[in-house]
Amino acid sequence: MQKALKALALFLLVVFCTGCFFNTQDLGVQKSKKKQITIYTIQGDSAVNKVIADSVMRFQQDNIDFEVVQEIIPNDLYKNRLSVCVATNQMPDVFPTWSGATLNEYISIGEIVNLEKYMKQDDYSERFNEKALGMVTDKDGIWAVPVENMAIALIFYNKDIFAELDMLPPETYEQLLEDIRILRKNGYIPFALANRTAWTGSMFYMYFVDRMGGPSVFDNAANRKNGGSFRDEVFVRAGEMIQQLVDMGAFPEGFNWTDEDAGEARDLMYNGSAGMMLAGSWFLSTLRYEQPGFVNKVGVFPFPSVKEGKGDSKNTIGTLGDNYYAVSSTCKYKDEAFQLIKYLIDDTAVNKRIAAGKIPPVKNPKITDPLTNKILDYINESPNVQFWYDQYLPLKLSDAHLSLTRQIFGGKDPKAAADSMEKIAEQYYTK
Image (cartoon, rainbow, N blue to C red):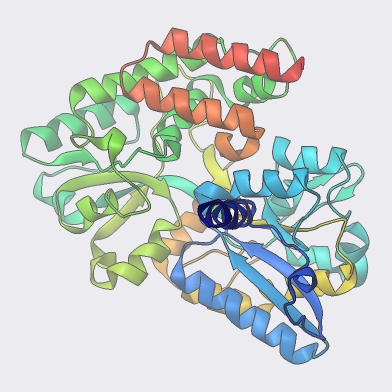
């Protein structure tokens, strides 16, 4: 009996861990007579999930022969989940992806459909922001559709605290350091940060790299070109600047162990303990959902320039499609799968996303909120939007980047961290 229970537990564990689709007919489960399209989504925002649910419902109403099977997956688990599905050849029909190395891997192994013929039909591609579409376009075609949001990392701040201390949003890193000292002196936490999953702290690292070296430093290292290396002095210096902030007390106690998904950083903003937070611009949507009364207290400014840095101070870190949706090459109903994606970003969905505080990746979205429009201006003015390292890089390198960056926040020697990252990259690309 115990052996039978163990076997059953193991079976359920495998099914749960893979999360991929299997033949329910073999288990005696009655299958739907409708044609099925499966879709993964990873948006944790409840308001956005309502938009997706509405789009799915409308697609099904207009396509009565089809049933959409949706699975909502936590963002931090998604890359591992999808890796299992690729390895077992059990891909969902429609799924979110990103640009960069991750997308290139799917293209190289023939895992996704070239959507160019669909995007060019009736000039549908003209609907989208050119920068957003450019991130998933190459000489061979268009590989995914920008859907969820144009999001960049910016510094959000409590306007009441800044007014109380007679502070203005800093334009230079030296001014930012002075603001940190003033906030500390007056009993405030300068930056709210919850860094257990590391991608939050990574935003500081990415901005330091960009401000000091410009976009080419990461591009060359990540794509193994022009002699690029993660040992580059710019990466080392970025780590040293992070540790300067840590040593100044710029972050709350225990920040490397607190959870962003549980709201432990933004709660410090809501309760007036922290003066600033470096966050993706989706923070506005979260803020309107969780603390609508706090919205008027929040201002925003771009990451400051760094003296003698080579990077343009208008460069930003983020994504212009967050998320892009692709169609698996194993999908039986590719035409209808693309139609489903169109419902996710049609006029109805666009208006609902704007109402939820998002910036849809379409041309000239009709946004009336002043703060959201200010963020859109930063996007439009940005000469380069550096895609998040952890989403751009292949999974092994992404994990290494996040782990090593978090270790830098914890005191690891930045030069040793840069050396470790380069060794992992060398091993990955010579395997």
